Image (cartoon, rainbow, N blue to C red):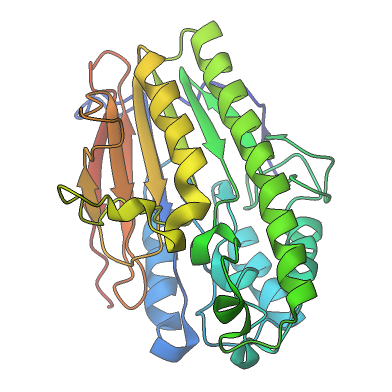
Length: 330
């Protein structure tokens, strides 16, 4: 029988050695058929299942960007998530919807694939996994924006946002529209309309999440999505490369993240995938200063399939302790 955890349940684990209140796992960007790493991905799943984490977060891309977006791929991913012992919270990546217009992906309509994701993974107010956790969805279940989720665990608010790679589904010009794609100009206009509407929804969900964190005196906020919004680009004296057109789809969101973080008294952890190697830092994302209470974690990804463990201790001023977990095949 499935065990369902309530939305605001306290998940307190006995971890005297680390003094953690609870822990959770971060993973994403796997399995990739082109890298033939299904066995390594299963080893990651087995490692997470054996651990004492309360739940895991998968930050997008359950297929590679050069493979077809056929219906069976989504069903296979659903079985993968539902087979895990503890709750799994998923946010979509670009490989499973934004990039499905590509010829080598089958030339699908990206918005139609996003609708499939919503119906497949967000038709109930619950996480995936054998053990369920209650989630709050921004939109009606299985419909627009239902993939934006929120939950609170023992003094930490978690915010999942649909922010994929490929410039957040924003199409800046005709060349980008047609590149390796079956899209028409009308399709790309539709994509830009989708981007504009979802961006407004994301900003509203972010603001309401921080409002919940402030009202409940939460010690931390965890924001998670798939795309690298430009953290690792140079900021030279005359040019801030994160402001280039190919990253324009993230600018309003990241300005809002910086604004909300600067007002918030607790710690903010932003989690994303996209670039497939582990990184943890405190990047500059507020004009002219470092946000001391902001930490970025980029998760592992194919072919380097491992996971990241996050320990939460509300008595620690930093709240979050980050530990990469390297998984070896037997």
